[in-house]
Amino acid sequence: MTVGRAAVFLDRDGTIIRDTHYLSRPEHVELLPGAAQSIQRLNEAALPVILVTNQSGIGRGYFTTDDFLLVQSRVEELVEETGARIDGVYMCPHRPDAAGNRACECRKPGTALFLRAIADHGIDPALSWFIGDRWRDVHPSILLGGKGILVPTPETPGAEIILAQAEATVANSLEHAVSKIITSPPKIPEHR
Image (cartoon, rainbow, N blue to C red; front, top):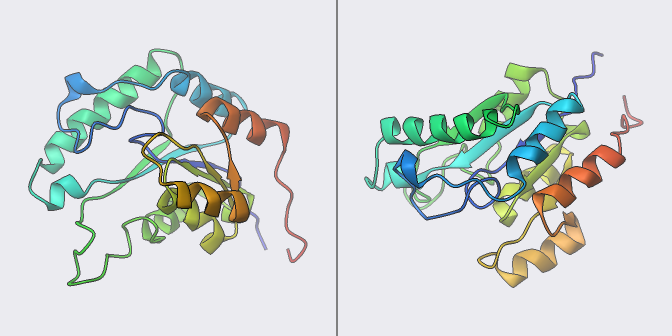
């Protein structure tokens, strides 16, 4: 059986850029301190950086897919200014209640976008890390057998921090999370 490579799945809003809620204008993109440098460290460690983001503002009619693409282009431009790169971007445009009263499978914590990225990039989820500022960003690590790291912001509910302390890891910044990743190389699960 071929084992895929490790990767790092990052949330976007609140994890690498300031979360302004329903961001639709590229000129409002602001990288969080240390975010681009953290991505660059992952690049240097040969770990693919995959962005997985919920963008319900599209489904709610607040902005369009084209607006998202312009914002995302600006995010990548700012990251690239430091010599870093994002290797893949996967976005769910649906509202939380897209399918009646239940969320679609691509909206985090659903795993559809992660599974697509895993197939597209030859990733082994059991060797990978899942980082974000909300439990929905980290929970896929449990569903897919990887390692989750919550990087809380003032908007992260306390209950989610407690849950992450019990079920995953909590880091006080993206830089701290990346240091944890780089200093603890992945171990291939025994069942392989």
